[in-house]
Image 1 (cartoon, rainbow, N blue to C red):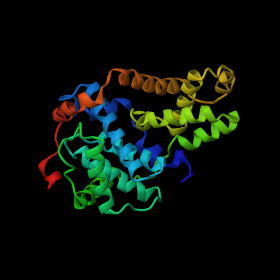
Image 2: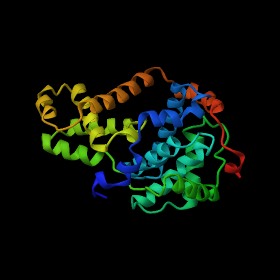
Image 3: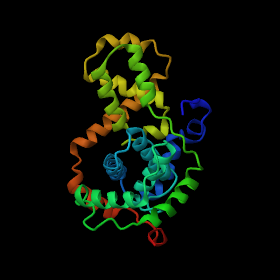
Image 4: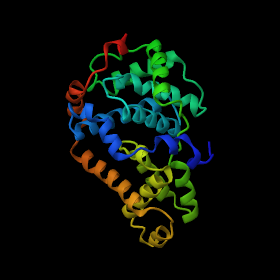
Length: 267
């Protein structure tokens, strides 16, 4: 898994151009505003996180599942597959790829039913509508759309290496780690290299914790500063959106407005 990022399918096929991403989304953005689209993806990133935690999966597995989810919709409309079906399918696949061990079909379905009912009833008043065969069918479709590019490099490892280089900074690591998790609610995992995301999150963490003494450490990094600033803007904009976004009152109507999956996806 360490491997060479620059020779990986992640770098060669799945670092996307922002303009291409916007163009691919035009079908959905004809129905939804950019802010509404973003809110829907924040919701499903939260859903994947909560579902993964209930399944007792490592954060690496949850992060990889979220990247699969975002990659799929980077090249497909929301109406191609119901996100409520794709979310657990991404976790199902990521648990195998990250060598966590395959989750049994019955455990996945039971957990989805419980999580939807107890945690996300404000979004889905009805029970979780899918069964094991739906997830297995969806997994083949997901694999095809990912072009079997399943190895995802995450910012966690470069972040740990940077903290090690800086010195023993447990609080800084804890905050930067949470910011990396938050970054999964944005497009940065589709647009930038993991080490760049790690630097961006570390920079924000230093500002929050007023670590002015690390300015010289950042200045010595051989990185594209413009890209780091773009990443920090994505994350800061996410926080600005969160301030006014009441998911529990807004998401039900947003899901109703969302382009719907084709009937054959629900058979």
